Amino acid sequence: YFNMVEDMKKIRVFCRIRPMSEAETSCGSIPVVDCLDDYSVTVETSRGLKEFQFDRVFNPTSSQEDVFQDISLIQSAIDGYNVCIFAYGQTGSGKTFTMVGDKDLKNPGIMPRTFRTIFHITQENSSKFDFKVSMCMLELYNERLLDLFVSPVDALGKRIEIKKDRKGLVIAHGAETKDAASAEELLALFEQGCCNRHIAATMNMESSRSHLIVGITMESRNHTNGCVSYGKLSLVDLAGSERVAKTGAKDEQLKEANSINKSLSALGDVIFALSTEQVYVPYRNNKLTQFMQDSLGGNAKTLMFVNISPASCNTEETLTYATRVKAITNTAQKNSESKEIAHLKEIILKLKSGQPVDDDV
Ligand SMILES: Nc1ncnc2c1ncn2[C@@H]1O[C@H](COP(=O)(O)OP(=O)(O)OP(=O)(O)O)[C@@H](O)[C@H]1O
Image (tube, rainbow, N blue to C red; front, top):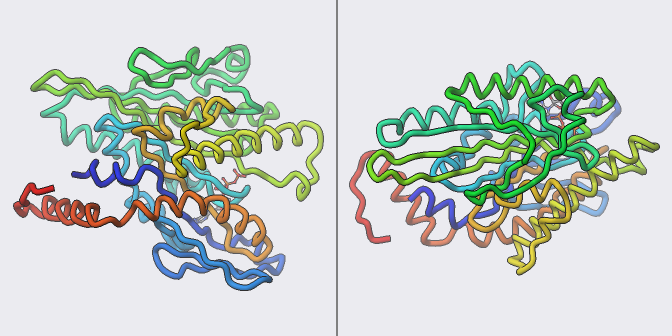
């Protein structure tokens, strides 16, 4: 039943408003973004109040737990679906905070919490299934994929190609894939990857100017009938797309910004094509969308965060991002609260509380 509910909502957009930063307050900016309820955001603009709808809105006081509690897609990936969760938004809007957490992981975000949840679910089901969990970790920098499980110098000498494997999953051919038997092992692999990313940053590849891609593959074998299913979870922390004119970027920075903008607009085109049910979906236009191909569209489930700053100095960017995702939320909204979904939700609640259900769906 859980997957039936999730099936009806293939792309969902959550909005997270971060608190005002010290820099914003000290330069005289004021908060102009408000949450009307769990689904709507208003932005005060010089042309009046603009309202935007999302599948869920998190306000500046929402904690990392609150955000993670609303993500139910980890179970879907373990059940054999391809799932993609990513954060999108202006530079400094809170993408890394949402996806990874703060610097020393005192306030862990979606990625570390996901590692724990995967093993929590697999342990709960270990009497019925054998599970195998593996992970690859990549950085997309200036349109080049780099393996974060090898040293940055070695990574530069490696060629990584995006291919489909025998099971039909998209893989980064040439990149290391490591198995993990516990949440701690998965977290240790992730920290190793982050460490290589920091070293690379000191070699002039600033990490916030690159996209971080974590791919987790989950294989489950049913003890009773021997059936094997494969699910893939792609967790992506996208680089911020800075407006080149505003930042006055030059040479190398300009190349980085252009490359980031290229992959973000390719991703935007794919999401738009999917949400408007176009026949042709332009996955092959960019390495980012090529890698995410099996986790966007088709049977895959996508959760996109749009991170925004509440400050008046960022109103223009906030409006741009909110407007860009409007086409998607409109479609998602249409699918989200049908009678069938409400009925299935009721059944799930009953099952959770141990009450009997009539199987008349
Ligand atoms: N919800 C939040 N609560 C508290 N602090 C936050 C929140 N979101 C972001 N921050 C803080 O705001 C700052 C910028 O956030 P973050 O680095 O996540 O932005 P970003 O969108 O990933 O930026 P970039 O595109 O440059 O990588 C960080 O210091 C972060 O800790």
